Amino acid sequence: MSHAIDPFMAPLLKQLKEARPVDYSAIPIAEGRKLSEAANAPWNIPRLPIAHVENMTITGASGPIPARLYHPAGQETRPLIVFVHGGGWTFGSLESHDGIARHLAVESDCAVLAFEYRLAPEHPFPAGLDDALAAMEFARTGGLGAG
Image 1 (spheres, one colour):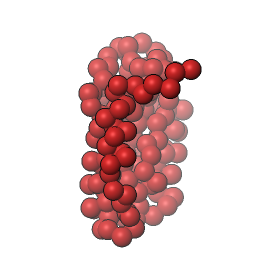
Image 2 (tube, rainbow, N blue to C red):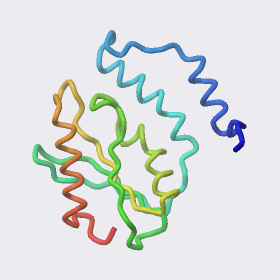
Image 3 (cartoon, rainbow, N blue to C red):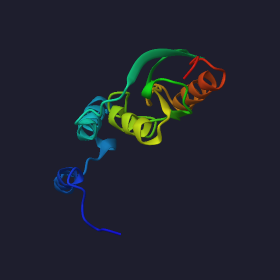
């Protein structure tokens, strides 16, 4: 096993090491979200090419849920991964986790369904979890058609 650092990871690890910790509980939520989006930005560069990306809307119990479907190799039928981005039900978005969803689709050779769950504190728990369950139900019942 090699202990060498991947050249792609070296600048990201350096940036993480040099960054000052953020106490997200001590700043306004909007500012925390901006910092979180900025912290995730390096994981999206360069944008990994993928055969097909489709923006869509999932119907949730409390209204529409923005979603994105990633196909690694065109529209052929593939297994599907429902991707719930990180962020503790408070941070994160389709954009902040786009790179991870792309890599997951390409490396797994599966279609990936990502979505924007409602965030706390505006939407207290279990709102985000309810949106995740709606996305899974959407996929389970064939809402994606041939995906």
